[in-house]
Length: 369
Image (cartoon, rainbow, N blue to C red; front, side):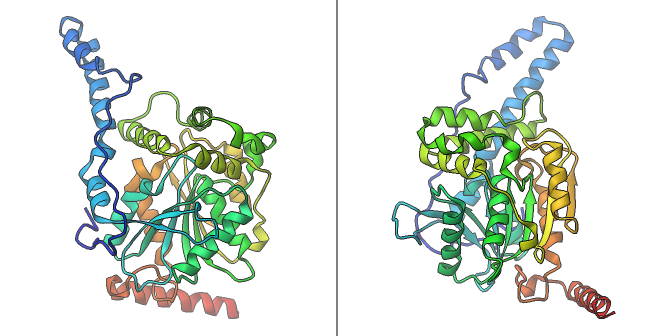
């Protein structure tokens, strides 16, 4: 796997503990093995069906028990940073890659996600020489409050401008932060994965102010209602299982605040961020976003690069990580050789720099004409 040799703990602050393997919940009964044994007396088709179910359950346990995930958890330290006057607002983040890079790529998780959900991107991209930060935001109930808190975090990390990858709610927050700092830009580019530009698409604006009253189990039920339903391939099933596990780790206030940000009446004003380079990553199969929401994103960013996946569901960065990592690399490659490169210059091939310089000269000549 790329990145194992380049990842080294950058500080000794608060490492996460390896979580023991989670037992199969009642909804996925362990009696599948018994069913597989019983199928010996059944016809051949039934036996194949039972074996397929058993294989799927075993595959679904692979992410949180995989060597890659355990390597990530044991190698990259989890940092906790407070930048607000309120000590309860703690930013949790993983920071890997060369610290000399002042314009890294930062990952924003969806409503159900934590900083760990982008571990495959961190392992691969740092192996290519990029500096990658995956974070988990504290409890914020207002978009302006969130944007101000993230700006303080960038100041604390001494980062002038950054590239942001946002998934679902994370993509919306990334757009709002770029809009919030448009007069003094802090976002150099955006990668929006299964994201949206207007919270009205969820038809929940009238309940946004009541999420803080709801118990945790009800909030989790709301989030789980947007997960893929019906049969999916083993990798997608494994990704869903991992995200459910991450969802269980969030407390009531974290979930309520995220749903509030996700549903309170707000939309992106594209004229404020028209200078930001954008790549939109979408999937063609079932996801929480409607076709109308995706089309609205295309209209909002007509000059954005589009990267499409045939399948991937709500979490392509987990179940189609190789494709997503390639899309990210292609997006970031346009900044190689500039002060906003997220990669260590030593890792960039000389020929690639020459191609980039030629491309920049061509763009400058076309602008002059």
